[in-house]
Length: 297
Image (cartoon, helix red, strand yellow):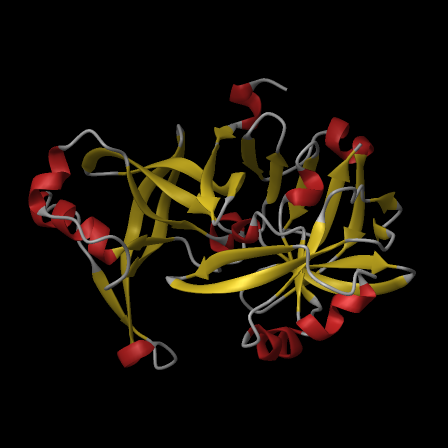
């Protein structure tokens, strides 16, 4: 498949040290640019987020300089202070691919605080998050080995014939909950590219369904929207399938989640989160049009 036909969007892996470990695939970022602001940015690819957004603290000095880019406020009683702040009908690019006439959420008060002087430095700033709303009613291909994604209106014969799909459940925010069979019992997991380093993350009480290890062999300090906490890893010892596809779990761990996540899991009727680690040598299709999750054979 050539790049032009599939409108491939390249992505980059972000690595960093957590404690005494270096994790080379900690997060995914995608080159990002906004119409009217002549600078290059990058955003995290996070399918656990339902909104594509830019961070107010980081973008503010650019808005002060390029006053042709305007914000709009939308009343919404379910959001903080009863308001959401958006760019409306804006155009932006992921890598070289144009997305236009869309809303882009402005997360006021979040992100790295930049000074006006930093606007013209050559450093590519991390400006925001790419969420599921951008792929509504689309087929999202994630080609992990070639580090690229594509958002398509339809699938060609190659993908239709080569992909093993399972029916998923879409939550009210547009995120997909994928059925994962563990030792013969099926549970649903929220597919979350923002939880990249975790094959699976579950409440501590559910660890024993996935691992027979009595104690953790790994501790990591991670963060969620600026809040840091420790998680503990246990070697996966159970057989895991997605549909008829057996997942290779050698050297992979299941992690316990922050205890506050339990309420979220119960509300969403999921066992936990599923990150990218099962699929690093694969191409997958997140089918938001038909509510399916597929692994390309």
